[in-house]
Image 1 (cartoon, rainbow, N blue to C red):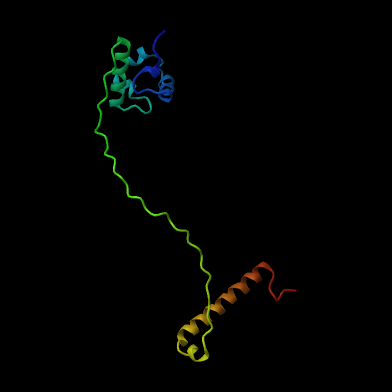
Image 2: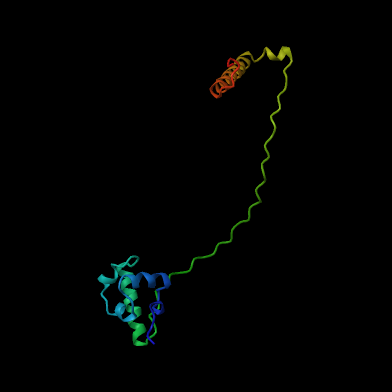
Length: 138
C-alpha cells in the first residue's frame, strides 16, 4: 500500500484535505510538482511548498525526512505570584443632615444640590407624561 498524504512531514489531516481538493491526492503528485503549483494551494507559501516537496520525495525514496531547523527554546521565567483580588462591595451612601448653622456655610453647594434635585424631578415627571402616567391625564 502507498503512502498517505498525512505521512508527509508537516501535513496533518486538515492540510491533506486541502491538498486533495486542490488536485494533490498522492504523495507522488506532491513530490513531482513544482514549487509554483503547490504554492497556489491555500495555506502554502513558496518556502512551505518547497519543504513539503522535499519531504514527499524523501518519503518516496524511503530516506528519513530531513530534520527541520530548530529555533532556540524560550527561557521559562518564574512569575511572581500576586495576591488574590478582593471582591469590592458596593457601599451604601449615607447622608447626614447638617445642623442649621452649618447649612449656611456652603450656600453655593446647597444651591447646586437643590438645582439638581429640581432637575431630576422634572425629568421624572417628563418620563411619566411620556408613558401616560402623568398626574394631568384623566
